[in-house]
Image 1: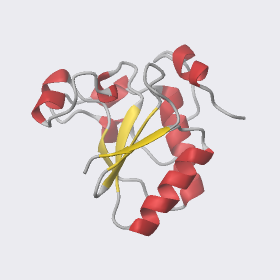
Image 2: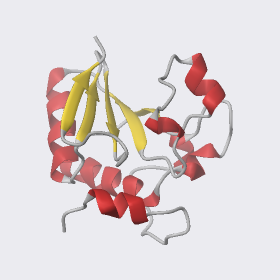
Image 3: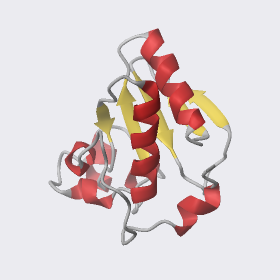
Length: 139
């Protein structure tokens, strides 16, 4: 089943989704607010979990939900998808080119269409208020 942008619009924090196999909500906490990983979009997390299954390699989360204060501290943009509630953005640590490839392919297979490429991370989000089908870089 393909996930569409409309699915993200309809998703909220109250939906009941199956338990995640590879992630805990605490992995998505803003460092300045314990428990804030609960602000993550359940549909986004399910898609991320399924992408992790396809990739067959670990996804280490560098950043999930961010409070406005933490977003400012790390130099995030004012309209960062990391601050959405429900939050539909994550930065995934990348150790080498092969893992970058496997992670991007698995995310695309799950229906994600927005990617930012950093030297050692991939940003992925499902923000329907922003341009779709795009890849940008941070260097």
